[in-house]
Length: 158
Length: 335
Image (cartoon, rainbow over all chains, first blue to last red; front, side):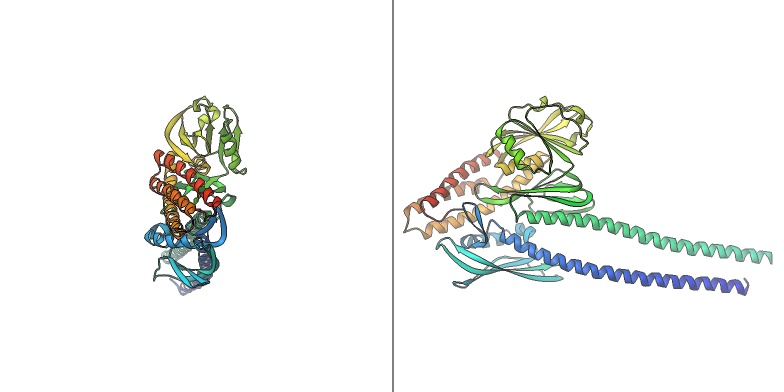
């Protein structure tokens, strides 16, 4: 092989090397952009999921206030709550489909302070955690009195 | 000298070929991987949309929606939804749907399952390419026609007639009253696969009744099984579900939910009865009467079968009366 040909092959190898480096840089840049988009999407999905779980809690027939099948919005029946808290803990696996990894607590602020924990399934292996607080009225059918409280839903997402 | 030159030229070509092949291989791998990823991503996003529909179903009652999504084939089984290789399993899902939904337009409907208090929302899912043919002239047929969304591909015939083929991938006939399934002419539906042409025959009112499930067998109908319904929402479920197995799986899930909700109403009514103990004897009687019915519903909701449906239907009527009594005597209502 003469010197001219060796130089030609060397040039070609150098061009290919530069070409592959440019492709690699482009690929790394593309992956980074995709990763950041994915993170953003994951974050949005997590927030949506958290709000979704909060909505599902609010519309549970096990907790909702109703009179003659007419539902009162943003209201939780205290007597149903008392019954439901035991049942929902007992049937944790059944409710996992609806609430996934989350803990649901109801706190009465007025007229007296009280707290109910209705569902709790937590994991240490979570990537994000969201807390959604919903102001609610708490109806006590035995005393026919309304109270005021907060429904707190803490959602953990893997 | 000549040999050396020839070797140089050959080596050059081999080198160019190898480098070209490497570049081509690299881009082919990238494109193939990207294509696979895009396909999986589309399937996953469709599945996510359906998951959102299932989750949202619990929130709104009596709603109808059309959802536009990438053209796909969604397979629905008992507590399972899958698209291609991506699937989602549920512990207990109340979603009545044909076993296969094709097309880019999904139709969803929700109705409350109340016997007599709301236990859950029933979700119905189908594609706009599926065809529903209602045949009958009684009030129930008219009511069901009104309840089914207008955006659905549906037809209403008062009498049995020859059914034409309109190139739908699935055809479902809903026959009411005394019309015999075999009196309905299959017409050009004859050429469709047997599993894609199904029918139900309904005997009953909007409270409860019997349903017979049929499937096309050549140019005749073959009876595949029978079941029962309780309430209009359950009957609508039988309209959407393809098979008796799918219908009964969903009804069993609805009954499991009814069982849980009834347990809560039982606990609530016991507290109401005990809190009113000394003050209002009429309220106590009402609550005691209600508790008897709630106990019946609780026991009967453990399993979906003919006897339990009868028991729940009777107990629901009684409980509804007790609820009216509670209102009449100014007691706190039972539900």
